[in-house]
Length: 454
Length: 113
Image (cartoon, rainbow over all chains, first blue to last red; front, side):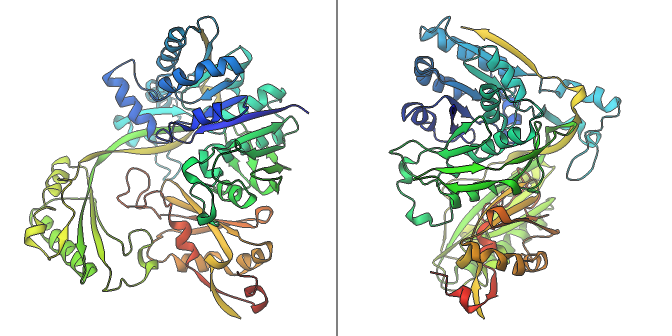
C-alpha cells in the first residue's frame, strides 16, 4: 500500500532553524510542512510590510529554501508553508529569486495561496450586515474597526491541493490553518474527496499532531520527562500516511526525543476545546474517535478517526491596537525575600497613585513563589533564596506606561534591602496588538491560487 | 482509602485560546481513568483553581485517550498579548491541576510506582 511521509519542520516562527534541514537530510520524506503563523504574527507582518512593501512574510523561510531547495528538487520533496504571511506574492518572489540563483530555473514552480487578506473589505462587510462579532465577547467589530491592523481568513487544505495539482514544488500561503498544511498533501496524493469526512478528519488530526513540531516527539512533555533521550538532538515528527486515512507518527532514526502513545496523547489534547467538534475550514473532526497503538520504537499508529461535514463559515483572525503595556522586575534575596518584594510592591503602587497615573490594570507577581500557580502554590516560605518582583501595567495612555517604567529602578535605593537585578535598564513600553476572533460566511471569500515559475 | 496527588496517577498539557486555558488530563494507566472521571469533577476543579481562574469550568471526556479536557474561562488575565501575566498562555496550568489531591482505593494506590 502506498504511503507518503510528511515531515514537520517548524512549529512556529522562531522555532529551531535546523529542524527542517534535519528533516530533509535525516531520512526519506515526501513533504516538508512548515507552520510559521501564530495569532499575533500577522499583525507584526502587517507592520513590516507598511514600512517596506516587499516584506510582510516569514523571512526565515527564504534562507531556509536556499539551503534545502536543491535537495528537495533532487529527491522530489515538496514543501507546504504558511510563510507568506500578509505578502505571499512577495515571499514567492523571494523564493523564485533563490531558485534562479541556485541554477534551478525551470525546475521550481511555486504555488501561491492568497485572498485571505480581507483588511480592505471590512467596511463593506460591516455595511452588508456581516458584523464580524468577537467569538469570545459577542461584540461587533464596529467597536474597534478604526484600530484594526490586520484581518485574515483562515483557509484550509483545498487551495493547497489545487496548487499541488498544478505542479507546485513549494506552496506558500497567507493565513491558512496549521492542519491544512498536512492534510493537503494527503488529500492530493490519495485523491480524497472534499466530503470524505472521515479521511479529511484523519488528515486534520495528523496535522494537529505534528503542527507544533517537537511537542509531538518528546519536547515539553510531562510524562517521564527526565528519561526522554537526547533532547539536544530532538527529532521532529513525521506522519507516514496511508490512503485509508490511517497513519503512523514517527521520526528519523538517530535523533533524540520520544514518540509513544503517552507523548502523542499530550499533543492531542493541546489547545483542545470540545473534543467532539474540532472545527477547521475543511471538516469537524472528532477527537473521541481516535485510536492509538504503539507500533515499534518511536512509532505510534493512529486509526478509527471520524469526521463530520464542514461548517458554512471561515474563522477570521483580526488584530487591533489596544493600548500599551510594560513589565518591570527586581530581585530580592534571602532573608525574608518574599516579604521584601511584597513591601516594595506596596511602595511602588503608592508612588504610582501619587503621580496620578491611570492604568486599566496593575498586576504584581512574585516569581519564585507564586507567579505561575498563584494561590495554588501555597504560602511562600521565609527561607526562599530569592524572589523576583514582577510588576506589569496596561493603559490606553502611552505616557502613563512610560512614566511607570521610570519608577522601578529608584526602588533599589529607596526601598527594602538586598535587591538587585536592575542592570537591564528600564522596561520597554510595548504597543498591545489584541486578537479579535470572528466568523465569516464562506460564500463571501474566495481563495486565489496562482503558480509562478523560476 | 489513600490521599494522593493527581501528579501520581496522571499527566497533563495545557494551552490557551484567548482568555480561556485548556488542560488535558491523561491517566497514566487505564485503571486510573475511572477515578479521574469520578473525582476530578467540574466543581472540584473550579474549587481547586479558586483565585487563579475567575470564570466557569467545562469538562469533556475522551475515554479513547483515557483523558479529560478542561476549559478554564477567564483564566489568563485577558489572554494573548493583552495579558500581563508571566504565564499568559496558561502553559503551566497543566501542573497546577496536578497539584490537586484526591482519595483513591488502596488497591489502585498500590499501582503507583
